Image (tube, rainbow, N blue to C red; front, side):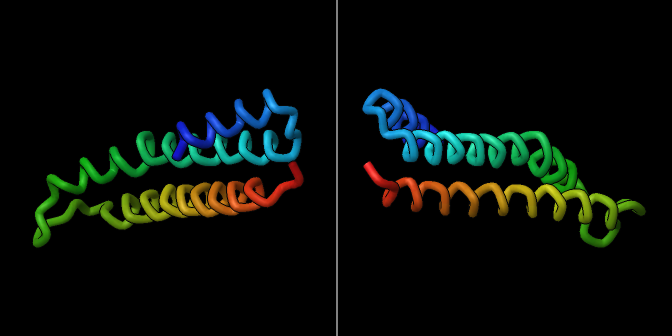
Length: 94
């Protein structure tokens, strides 16, 4: 999705389609945000949690869950924003 959105941004820019270029560019930023938050936020927490034992979690497990939920909310907003922006870009005046 990131590569296609980047290609759309470049193609629309070359063709002089201003609205589509801006919307697709914002889509790229939203998708990049989603990826960065996943890799730097959720993924390290997932790796740490994979070593936990269900019957003996760490004493601060609720803090880890809260951090994971916060990162997940950011990822979800970024993904939904990217989807909406790309949908709007597809109907933007050409």
